[in-house]
Length: 117
Image (cartoon, rainbow, N blue to C red; front, side, top):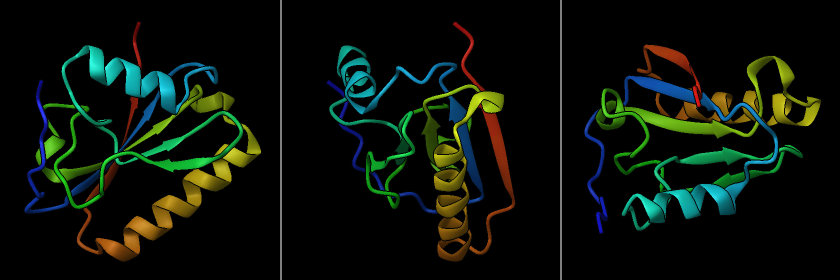
């Protein structure tokens, strides 16, 4: 099993992933990670269908969600479609993005990734 505990050297981007449905939750994401041989969730934050914000791996660690950006980004997973977020999810996303802008003022961009299944 892979267990990446490497610290990120630079944070240039925040990646926001949308699962495409609200039924995906922390436990399903954890189960998927284990099935792929990853001992912990690859995302740094998960926003569940009811707007609950949960932490995955520590935000200082290299993520495991997009090989192109893992080394230079913080990853957020939103259990929804981009246009189908609840008000609670939208508020949670706004709050965590504000926090990350404060934590990493050198962030160059926020990118949105849509799950294609």
